[in-house]
Length: 555
Image (cartoon, rainbow, N blue to C red; front, side, top):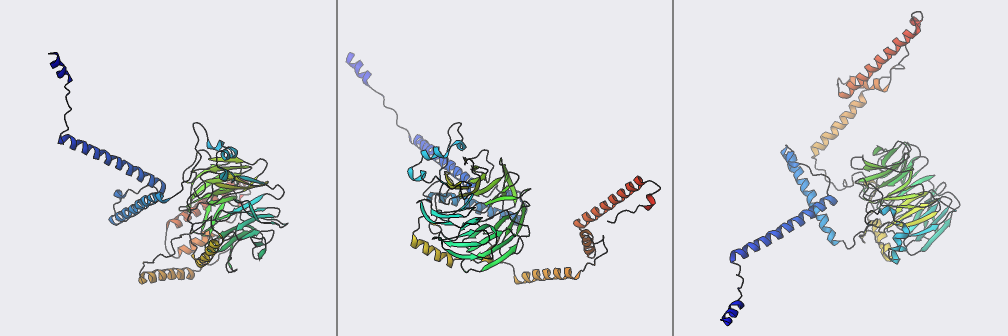
């Protein structure tokens, strides 16, 4: 009996095998979970793509009643969506990724000093932060070459130096013994232009004077357009001049008619020049038009500095009222603004969209401050007792150059440089032979000044209008011009030939009553009533005995 009990106790019951129905259910559940995970990943990918590469809020297509417009907008929204997704997918081909400073807990990145940052970097990167103490010839204006390998500095009191800042190799050093207002590299690091006391001079890398541009007098700001080989200058006389550096010809000379400009920069997307004036106006210029393409009232005082981002979409301006304003170049409207404790002297935008502002002896860097308004700065740097003169980001490097009254300082700004570059466009590691080949290709692909326009996509567009439509439009324009020339306005006697009266006489002959004319008629009536009221009050003040001699003033 005991053995039987032991045998019975040793018997174990095996678990039942899952039926076909249970296996099928589990497989369906697994497939459903995988599908949900894939759908979630796709949604996250699309959301990130729209945030980074999207073109604003989507248009509610279903609310559009017009069928043709609804179909066109639906097609455009589809193109925008596909473009954002393709741009996001192309990020897989990028070998390098930019890195920014990250604070832990309650720390703030703008509390990090350059000394603390350099201690955490490798030896090669830490060497990129250095200082040149040159207190005798300051303040210094600076300029980096397009490849970011060479640096050009110019002191106000006549000191010019060009060197390879990464290898600490000096190319040339000049003592010109006269005032220097600006320095600028040309198409490569073999030639540079210096705006001296009276004329603009061009030197080679050995410091030999190549040219003297005597038509550019007392130049205050210079810009070089690399794809057009144009050196643009503006001086105290208020004339904007374009010099072709490949042929030596003066392309055009434009009168701004606004006095001495206070600042100038170029839009790298379409080669339009942005010129700031003392009246707070920023004008946009092209060598094809004698008048400004656009006038934007940006500040209440002089525009001290201007910067445009790489895409040409946003413009940053600095005013005398200690205000840094961000503008949308597509609509010419203000996006937002920042205030500085003192009026800023210089401003620049990096390839990654970081904004550097120099005011007093301080340099402040803002992150994500262009499209959205940042709450606090990203980094800040102080140069005691040395007022900042010029700030410039180095291309393809996480470096910001600061020219001040005591010399030059290179500070490290993580995440400011473009980590991935196109070696066929600009190669920071090119040798002598590659540089020569690139120079020949640039000359072969040189763009003409006539191709500079606000719309960079205008070149190559097809005019789909029929010849009859073109002839009809040209005939209408000619007819309108003929009618305007036919209408001659006679000059009236003194006091009756104002701009308001001339406009009313001109439009009165057309027998047209528009909104503008009604407004002007109302303004004229208001002035008349105001003059009558003043006359009555004067007559009452004089009294009944002398009021008969009172004659109201002529209007």
